[in-house]
Image 1 (tube, rainbow, N blue to C red):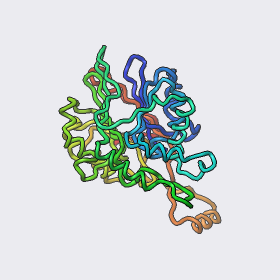
Image 2 (tube, rainbow, N blue to C red):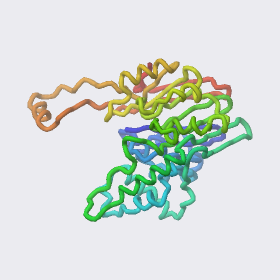
Image 3 (cartoon, rainbow, N blue to C red):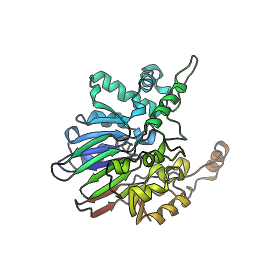
Image 4 (cartoon, rainbow, N blue to C red):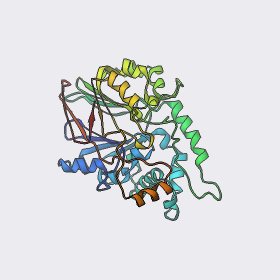
Length: 343
């Protein structure tokens, strides 16, 4: 599973943030959705942003890029360094199967761009990057709030430890699981409406990285960012993605909030959900994060499972879909499928 946000901002233009696969078809969910509503993805998708290099945000990105031939591919600046590209280039066909899926996905992107000799399609991103700024009709803008310069530098320095050493059989995930220093959070505005898409950006306690860097650097005033009424909550609603000033400075009081669960870490927790409910007018979660009852199986099967598994839990593989249509005056029209949980 994973998460994906698709923006439509008029004039037939679409922008995709992150990529994940449909559980049934194993195709990029953005492609399935856009094609189902008649969008010519080869022409109308103008940009694809991969906010960071974790599997639940990048899976299927290479297929998405190939189909959206008119789109620029935006990556965090920390993933566009010589070190990152060298790591991706290590994955020749004979060792591909021994690498992590997120690295393989990035390797396939680099390989495709190399084969097509279309390297101008890939664009590095850090704080203050403007993806688009249209003023002809309704003012429409998408701006990166992260990563900070310090976050990019730190991420680059950490890449060195993942270089393959003699005798190594496998290169593990390049972005450390504990810190999403290089995740790209964005601010989207359309007329009087604005939305904050928090990606997996975490609060590190360092004023030069994470959410603190956004407030320390005075980006909000410098770029005249309006308070957002729609919030894609970062890092699956966990405490690590929380900062009081997000809610005080970047959002209106009681915004509409939404997030995606992360089953492997049981996020968001009941405590996370309660906190977000108190801060939001409504909270939408893409699928039920709560544990499901175990399936009843034959006693012999149960004994065998207990002998080989230390712990088990049921996985909810239903894909939630939240659609928010907004007028140029900021009025919401919200629709969800049956898998979305409302609080």
